[in-house]
Image (tube, rainbow, N blue to C red; front, top):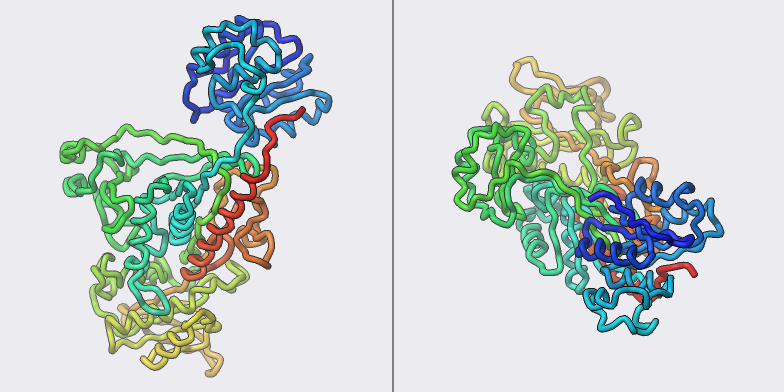
Length: 581
């Protein structure tokens, strides 16, 4: 629907009413404008006034010419407050009013009060809008104040995001949980075991995912991403882009019939490309939500999945769409990105199939992985020697100059997993420094030494194919021995570091959250907790503001939930001003 203006004399007043895409009762607003225009009050209806381009066009120097009073009705004044501040710098004498517009009744009350012309309006319209009569008092028709929403947006559905959502929901606070992947879980769901106890990762995480998806206070939006965040503290507006799954989530039962008949084989990104999968199906066995999705880039539109689906859930013509969410606080739990090992050309990643990253190794030994938990080389043989190379990208001035924190303990854990599968294998860890500072982490290191894991203080120069053409040769220079040495291995595992999350949010707040020189979000302060970003109302969890392990992420999630609840109480106790006198 296009912008429309009902022409009538306004006597120096410009009235803008927003047709919010998320607002119900748009026809009532159109009816309001028509009846007000018939009473001599000009109203301009605008689509999505919170859009910067739209607002700049409607509240510009040309549009405000000869205007003495500006009246804006929107779903929340705080969402456009910053835009209004910028637009009115050239009009310091302009009187303006912002009103929390929720339905046609609010519009009549606002405009009638400002113009003192309620007696000129058709009494039948008041009955339509829910007023008993046109003779109501001023107090009954006063504009509503802009109350802060209570809903919280959690960005990221990993272990931290799910824990924060569950803690908030347990306090009665509604939560919207947005995850870019087709399933909740993040990288923890891909792990085989967790350190230092070597417990099953999905056994710990799975119940949290199910609880988050089934909690009545939590709305899970998988296959979605936050495209833009605007507004101000306490009144944020998030634009959420929903990627089509081409399967109706409300109809699909997760039976897998579509996957059985699909003829297209594609690499499984969930299994790090180590195993093929069908172009349609469920991401993994414990996925939440347990619903199928189609990879449209590979789909040949043969229609077999549509015929096989008894519930008629396939939607091949589905299109992306955007929704808007009004929220009081935002919790960023996006996690960190893994460093691309292909940038380390000397280690042969991408050239030698025997060179894996630590996450690929986790999928290899996992019972739900490409080999159902069997530790084998790409040639199908059992490895007799496995080498781990630490600081692959981390503590390197060319790539990541900081320590990624979790790599040392993760490699020690994976070395123990090798010995669980192959007790006679020779396991070697090449390290820069061993940093096992967490609780019981040092005990895991000691157990690994007792099991015979060999630790060499050296960072290898390169990895090459061994002379026999079957194994790999790791060349290194150890501090304890002069000259270059080599070690032959059947598998080489790179402990890659972590990078900041992608900066794909378009922040349209007055001051967006600051990032440090590496790209991680900055904390507001280091004392009293590190969950506060530099913008009030935006909180940080896990790897988005620096490398974190699972334990620290979960602790931060619960702490952030408590701080969010405190924040909500504070802003609800403070009266909000919806207009300027």
